[in-house]
Image (cartoon, rainbow, N blue to C red; front, side, top):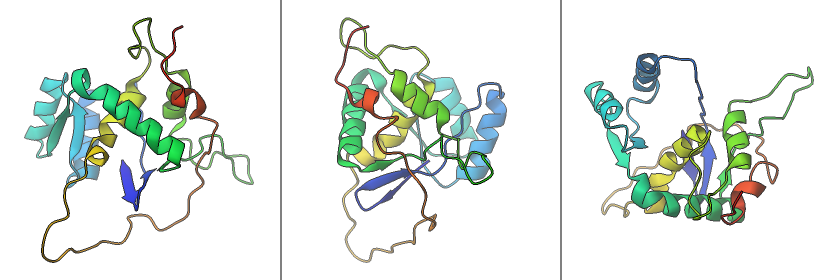
Amino acid sequence: MWEKQGETVFCRDCRIRPETALSEIMQEIREDFRHIPVYADSSAAHENDQLRRLGLSVSPVLFSKEKDELIGHVRWRLEKGFMKIPDPMLIDENDLPVDNSCLTLVRQMEAYSYDEKGKPRKVNDDAVDSMLCGMKPFLHPPPTPSGFVITHPPRYSYPSPFYGDEGRERFLQKPRKE
């Protein structure tokens, strides 16, 4: 889940569960994010329909047309410092991780690569694809409505440590061949 404050988007919830049944994940999404639009890969039409039946608002992301634009947008945000992800390697005074929920995302960003044709490789990239889906509403924000605008306080008021350069350097690189 991403939260926008000013120009900056903050990763507030990153859940990667490779061993969990899809039905359990969908139930969890429904319980925790009922009133938040879900941006999902359009190629998973059956799963998107299931989420809709659970009462969620699902907006499909067409990777065939939008992936390059979304990658460019994430690069721009990272370069400008407008995207913050908790440092998965940060430990507290007891040598315990402060927040390692984004470890898979950061590792996949570091390993992100392109084929000979300059297209992203479809290898171990589920967390990155989820992040790209989550960036869709920030590509072209809706226009400000006329009349009264009610602002809400940020969902999280605590300061959170975010990584600077470690996990993003490789993702920021222009397409390269491996």
